Length: 107
Image (cartoon, rainbow, N blue to C red):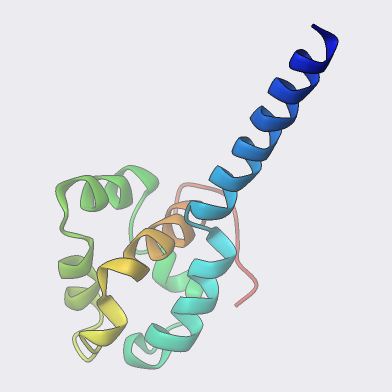
């Protein structure tokens, strides 16, 4: 019985750790912004994230219009920089440092 509990606990921890690594990441969003959007947007990450509140960023994400909003703010952004695989990371970064979050990024 004791072995079964240990195996179940180990499996739970392993599963929990793997789900964290598969989710979007604020730091990755910041790196992607610096690499793919900063030049096109002509503003640093703090200024870009402060364009909207956390609720507004969340609304864009939930409605599926985050790429459209980024294109509106940064008209010279390439379609390559706005791929779906990047949007979740951008969202996490912008939401973390939105104008009502009280957080300031280091970029």
